[in-house]
Length: 349
View 1 (cartoon, rainbow, N blue to C red):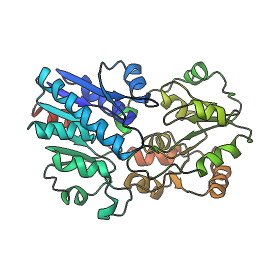
View 2 (tube, rainbow, N blue to C red):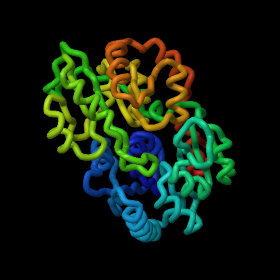
View 3 (cartoon, rainbow, N blue to C red):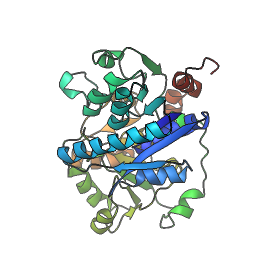
View 4 (cartoon, one colour):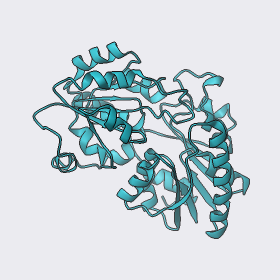
């Protein structure tokens, strides 16, 4: 049996087509207050799962205690289902338990460093705790092998695409989906979508205010302003009454395909927006390897300054980057069988 431990939204989408090709798979995830997006996506894509543990909150002590408890529960699941291989998107719990029990540990890591410039102190905390435990580690072409080699990883596999392409390459846009799911949308006006940074993650030092100041200004523009919450939606609805705040999981790719401008502190959804030719302003507190790749190719801009973001927004709203996006993404190649082959040690794939 193979265990997929999926604890972030990105990995639901990344793993779903890989899981379809495998037999004898168990999926685990975690819950917790204000941490429902992963569960909603698993349900949306009809992926059965076992709920184990919860998100540890904002404090380091809370994260550690919750992780230790969850690892103990994972051990019992692994014993019960006779798991031989553990697969994760660089999740500490699964990697630690898999390694400790002598199992095969497969990790995928597209952001090992909080910068595109390598410095030891910039290595993402989760990477320090998972990469060295990997039997096999997958990473995208934009991330240098050197980072993982310095952490003692011996078996590094490179794939020639940015992560979202694995689920976007066969995606078909439904032109009626957005209006049916978000009836407040006025299709005569541009759609501007905003996504918060993952401020509870270990790689983000604090919750920065400038993005929320930008949203305050954007409410006065003649646009459809849509906010995609990172965690809770209630406080955003109370704070930004003239914006549309999504409060349930939808297939966001249909919305992104109709978007005129995307402003976001995330990673995966930023990449998705560029794929559809939408100009993207990244408000992340750092620039990752894939951010740098997209900036260099004219698909993304970066700023942490309110006035600069608003100025960029005025210039970029409605700019059509589809031709440039097609040129960049057409050079990438998705081979799902490569992942399946490495996970099951089967040369037939």
